[in-house]
Image 1: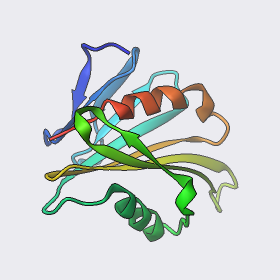
Image 2: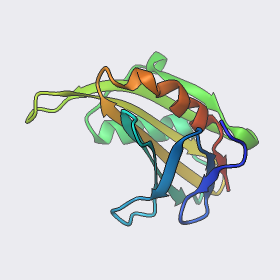
Image 3: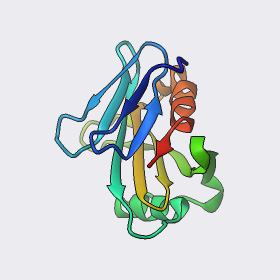
Image 4: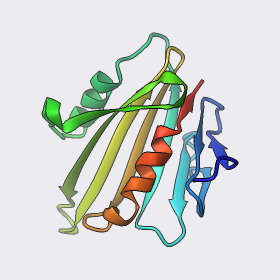
Length: 147
């Protein structure tokens, strides 16, 4: 990955080093998030940040986020990822089938926290197609620097 290319969210709460050949732009729905993708890639990484009033536990926030979406995971299905600058991210992977389409989607979902910032990261790709870039997505997430 190139050290020189870092992307920042529109709110200035985090930066992320982009994998070589990847692009980033504010998300199209105006939620203040950042979308990261490879032009010929399998999926898209979406990051959204929020101001945090208290230091949040990334794993607890991840479990709550997934529970709101009807996804239940066991403790051993969540891993910790050390981030640049000393913060930590809780990550989980799972597949979900779209009831209308009948197709499975791969999800990599993570939550990172610092005393001032909470970042939700979601990487989505068609199930089975994520393997080509999943390692690069994880490497990029490890470069997150929270405000």
